Length: 348
Image (cartoon, rainbow, N blue to C red; front, side, top):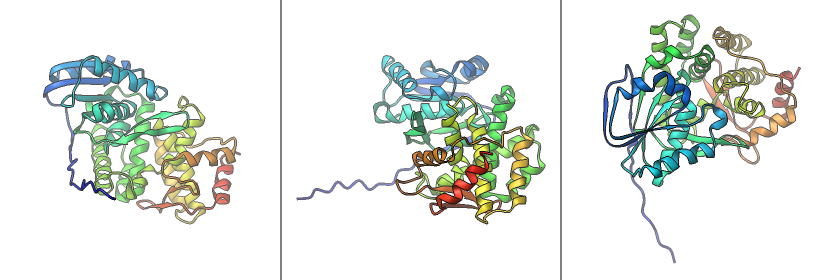
């Protein structure tokens, strides 16, 4: 006996990304702003002057990647239950990528899913983490291994928040901009080589191009079944580095910068990229004082950690490798010996 449940449907998850000064927003619902003490101290009064709601609550979670865990999610959910939030309520992610990922995940599981809005305050979250609906938390096995695809209702990118951004955080965001240019847009990469992103107009143009690039990829592959995985260039190596260093030594974008350099070294070894192209990428990263070296202590252990990557399977590891500048290849056919040779070159 067989019973069919006909669930085929078309769901429109489209939303707008606004890059401009934040305008006044009014919500006829309960709203909770999820933030951390640092962002709240710098910018909460500015945001509160722009938000009106039926009921408005502030939920503050500890600052940093080490707190991107189930304890923080429980803190958020407990507050939502205490204030009797319902399915018509709204969460606002107000902070960097960590806040965005946790708010999105909490909204995806609270009463099986409520809406949320992204108001990113770091360059990294503005150009990457806030766009595309990837949400999640870390655990002892690795980064973002628990989560869901849950698209925001809107993203508001206000350059005002970048005025207080520390230099390291700024550089971490630049790494994600470079990532998108290298994999999808050679002209954009040439723009980054020539531009000084410390200039406000140049930065706004870079944000626009990065967001347009990512939005185009997400529109084609929302759930990362193929093309969208290319946006993880640098991340396969970077996530292992973050895990090895306990998420305390490097910012996410810094680990991605190192990961791109390692991926480029592998791409050069496989004949996908020239030494000159790899040097050009490293030069742009170093222009913004991003780290480009990492001493791998144990190549076999580093290699085994790849199997915890969400793109990999039990038998093979998926690598995202640049093809020159402006192209990308997703492959699971790189032999272990070749990868170990590259890893060992970073252990010397």
